[in-house]
Image (tube, rainbow, N blue to C red; front, side, top):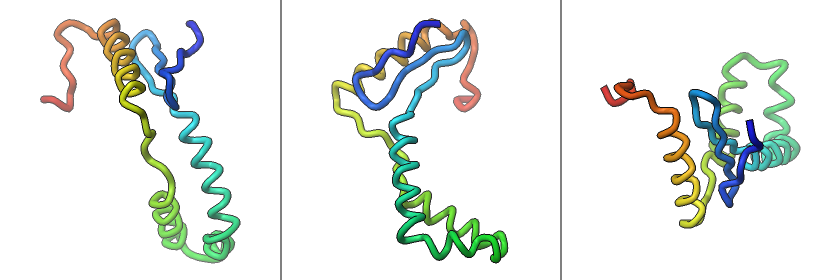
Length: 105
C-alpha cells in the first residue's frame, strides 16, 4: 500500500481494502503534550492521589482531562475540501453496491 498522502492539513487519509481511515496523529501528539503539561501542573495532586483513591477519583480526573483536551481538528476551507474529496474517492472505491449504512436504517 502506498504511503499516506497528506490532506494539506493535520489529517492524513488512508485506505485499506475495505475501509477509509483518517490519521489524526498531529491531534494525538498535541493532546499527549497537553496532557503531560496538565498532569505536571493543574492536575498533579489529583493524579498522585489515584493510587490511594477509589475508582470514582479516576473517572472524575478522566472527565476533567477529556474536557480540557482537543477533540477536533481545525481545517481551513481548502483543507476541508481536500479531505472531503479524498474521503469521497476512497469511499466510492470501497462501496459495495446495495450495502446500507446501518446507522441510516
